[in-house]
Image (cartoon, rainbow, N blue to C red):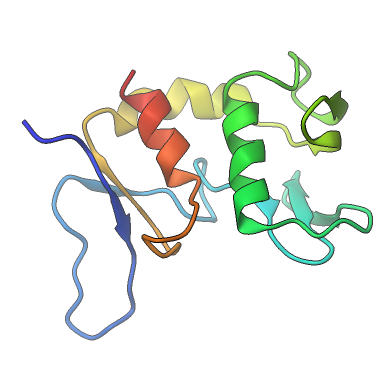
Length: 131
């Protein structure tokens, strides 16, 4: 059996989702609540909230998602947290629901809009789902 992989979604004519693949992009339970940009944003209770004046890179958004899944922001599901690597971080709710849903992804490929040569939150999802 081959290991699950990350697939890049496409709107190109004729493109079809490969079999054994689950969509993990926004919106949806597995979508990354951290949104890259200047300033970056986080989705809390369905609302996009600007994160101060920081520029949030794609890699930074993925790193926060991985840390969130790993429980590095403590047990509080929302609020703020002073993380040693990221500094002051707004923490969105929903981590418990994502962790509870991870078994659905076990053995499945994951599909997102991120390029295959870019950091993507699908990578930590694959990692956590297939432990």
